[in-house]
Image (cartoon, rainbow, N blue to C red; front, top):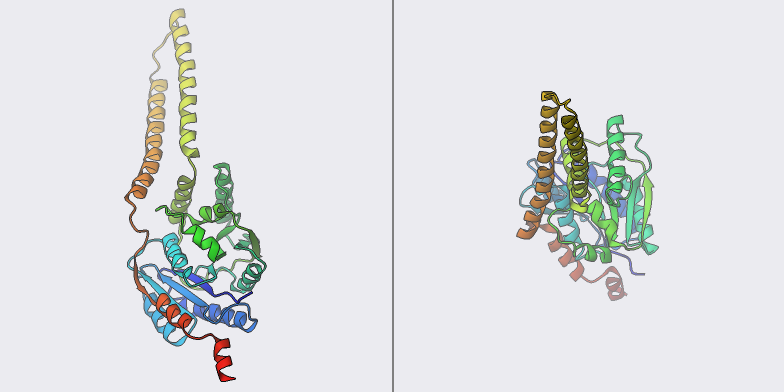
Length: 336
């Protein structure tokens, strides 16, 4: 089997504090893989700058001048983590046999990348990095994360438990992924839908090397809600169920009120009336809001706007140049 060209895609947003260490550790990983003859010499680390406001892009450019493994992709503005990751994957698939995605904060264990590549050699198209445990998380984060996975499963959305975006995908899997053209990108839900041969690699997640988390509670909740509404109509059906249940309760209350009236025991009930009005009003507003969320997603999809805009692409220029050069073995034959 020919040695595969591997590209490690790393989305970055204001990561100047951790960038140099990330580049250093990932470079060491690629060097080790090259020494073991597991990957081709053209393999790269593709840093995707998602509209950073700090020096992230200038550091990527500077490192790419001295480190042959490091290259970059600059988006014109901040499009969000999932779209930045998708931009890197779609760009890398044109020149790579397999692509690994990993966050820049070094919380995912880079040492298991070798296991990813070994699984690729064994014939797997998708390799998921799965956390062995959540001991490093706070109680609140651990409880909410586990609740999120259980809830998504009940909604009919099949996610890989304790898996984020640390994974390997073959070129074949990436080609199939590119056919999913929705504007509302939720890769954790899309990738399991591809259906290719897959496996899991367990690892222990570390603390963030430097800087602040780019996913505070507000963003995490928005991400979870976006994923739920992008992949399931169960919430709409739940609203229908609540409406039907409310109808049954209202019918029962109406029959009760009619019987009381006929028996001559009717009394004015201001409290029950107000509670009913507020309950029904709140239920209606919540239902309209949820339906509006789905309509908003339809609105975004039908406009067919580009999911990201690339301002500068160092990666493609470097890969086209390197892949046009004679291979190492061809050079050796010329020498001999």
